[in-house]
Structures are given as C-alpha cells and as structure tokens.
Length: 241
Image (cartoon, rainbow, N blue to C red; front, side):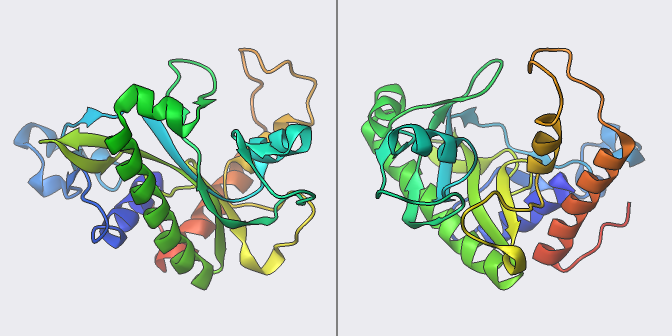
C-alpha cells in the first residue's frame, strides 16, 4: 500500500516537483529482475540521488509531539504560536518544521537557521517553499476525499543539482491522516495512520526500549484496514493483494 500510494502522489505532484521514479512496471525493470513476481506492486525503479540530510515537515494542525511541546512552552518546534490553542486545532497557516535524520531513535527537530547551517540558506528556502506547496495541494485534494492531512514528512535529493522528491510520499507512515467526518477540536483524533499502533503501545507497561512488544493480531489487522481505507479514499482504487 505504501508503494502504491507513493506512486499516486508522485503523479499528482509532478507539476510542483520532479521525483525519483523511473518505472513501477516489472516488464521495464532490468532483465535480471523480471522473473521476481513478488516485486509486482511492491517496488519501483528509481533514480539515485544525493539525499539531502534533513526531513522536511509541514504541519497544519497541533498534534502529536507538537501538541506536547506546545502545552509545555507555547512553542511548536521552536516557533511561537498563539495562546490557548487546543489539541488537534488547525493552525492559522501551515508551518515548516525541519528535522535532522537520525541514524537511530527519533529524528530531532531543528530550526530553519540550523537547517541553513547544514545545507545552505538558498536550499533551505527552496525546500521550505516546495514542502509547503506540496502540503497545500495534497491537503486540499485529500479534504475533498474525506481525509485531513494534519502533517507530513517529505524527503528530497539532488540530481544534476536539481531538487528531486524521493522516498515515500504522503503515506500513513509519513503523514498524519484524520477522517474529516469525525474531526473534533480538543482531543486526539481517530486516524488512518500508525498513530493507532502508538496509542495501543501507550496502554502497555513498556519503557520504550528494545525489544518492542509483539503486536496482537487484532491490532495488526485493524492497522492494515486503516491503511487500506486511506488508500481507497485517496485514490479511488482497491488493493488487489
């Protein structure tokens, strides 16, 4: 599903930014790979780029770790927000909150200034603009299909000195998806993403250190169904396998 949804968004966003996709058709892969039927629908051939070592995050709502930070100090990733906002409330306008790509553990939020120190001011400005433009276009489309994209994480690379969209894009693994028809300010939202798994883990007596507890079959099944529901709502298609 993550692969198929990324393919949908790569095509949807191609007027904003080029991407690393070459093909997802097995018949167009190198001949040595064409006998591997398990690659069908689960892979894509892509261009190799120089990955930019920063996660580009667009946030349109106050949720997750952003909500926790706001409750503590009135900031969202170091950006001052209006007083007395509520959980899951829509921000006045989407904001750009970059993060460093961690080798292990969670990525670390950084400021735009820190990002500029890492990759340069010009590249930072371009990536911020692209990130917010992608979020706005995807947000408007998804809203018309019954899904709120509360936030999303994007990755970019450089190919011949041009910015290319890479990795997965706007999937439930890299985004926070909420149903439009049940959205209500002031609490956490039911979701189509991996927040469902996080919520389950929060009910356990687990110190969040490896090894992680095994997930019950019902949590796995319900999570899979949520992902499939999101795919169907956004694309209009059903997964065949």
